[in-house]
Length: 243
Ligand SMILES: [Zn+2]
Figure 1: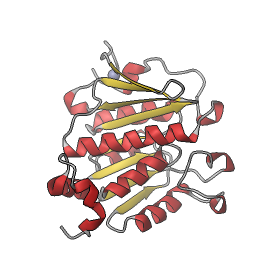
Figure 2: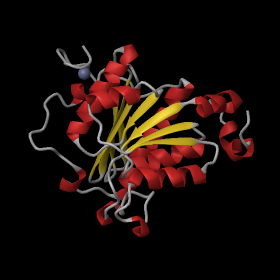
Figure 3: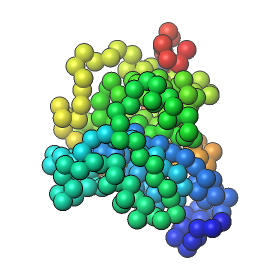
């Protein structure tokens, strides 16, 4: 290993990681779609763990209303491209890693072409149309997809593994909402996005290490009750994506 291992000393002590697991993390390629409320903690903890190749997809700029949860950004960066700011900060935070940015709105063909280069994709988006699009692209590209979402004081998390023909995002939400829901239409507390974004990073790290993940299951976190429940996800008959 070429990297300074002292940085990873405390996680090397974990029996599920060790030097062999750390090497897997160095070699891994993880793409995070969305560098906002979920993406900020997910990207930060992937970088902290030494995931060697991180892709970051976000076409947006920083708005004042982002700052209650999007902890990669400061008021001095308002109006600037999130992808460029996040890349600079993450590579400074951990010089062992390489961050590749995609400052574009994904469409079906671009998503498929980008996803093929990654071991895991993380859905850290804030709207249904984009989630459906990357669910389909991940399935077509046979790339595992970690999906996280938050609303007010609640969050959900699931992992889709196309090669194992697991249930998919569209099995959970078969009917596309008539109104394009975005984070501008409902409340989000930053701490809740922080929890679910961190869980997404954990799920990606477990996938890289070959550990148990939330396939065919959904985790439901309710902040007001302090509860985490894991429920089985039933693969929906006639799902257009995963059947
Ligand atoms: Zn499905």
